[in-house]
Image (cartoon, rainbow, N blue to C red; front, side, top):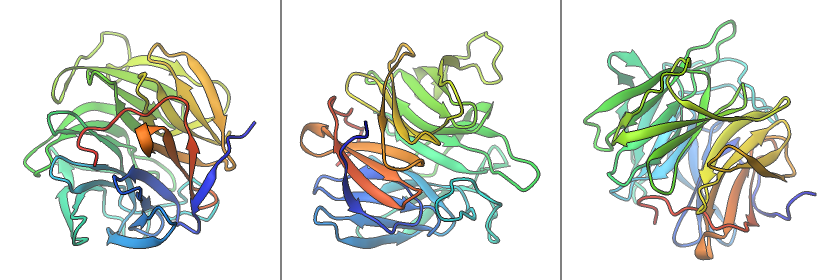
Length: 305
């Protein structure tokens, strides 16, 4: 049975990266449009910034600015998630900072250790003010770039590679204690856990994985995992493509439930509203931002406003 949802905005150009704000509005990235929009509580949609490329995951940083993973641009056809090739102006991905008061966009990072960022996808801040970032890896017509995980400072002074290669890493989120980084892998529908031993340092397990993460679970059948949010119980709530659900996974790797949505392309989720009991969900096949009541409150994000 599908969840009861309220449509807050429609006609969005492949929405992603929702960020719930204190005033009841929600910021949304439009990957196909290259823009960031604000959806007010009354449904009014306004332009916040023109980022160019393909803005994706977003988060509020310690200075109150908005930090954006920009995949550099894709050609998306309406109603379909798959990129049919890089946009004509694609030159690589970047991490951007947006001044919410002025809409000014600043590019912080385009490379790490001399390597071009390919397709930055999602972002989460730790309590120290550093940001964990997934890079999905760009899909080209006949090949694709590898993906990876990074840790960067919001002032542009440094970015570190944490794990590489990772197969199409998408959503990222931190456990309530901040000592585990969860990563959703799109194409193989796997959820990985990376144990954090210090800010920007992860423990590399000796198991035979290319990146040293712990396999938390694999979602059966043909499903593709997109971006995620963590609730206050530590469960990982993942937008799931093809089947059109939010998949809720426990910290132990058990699939607790699936929450069906009216769209096959459930791309992202965030929590807001009174006591964080409202889930804001981007439905990118239909270009909608919707909300629904959530039984478990979301985890309050570091520096959220």
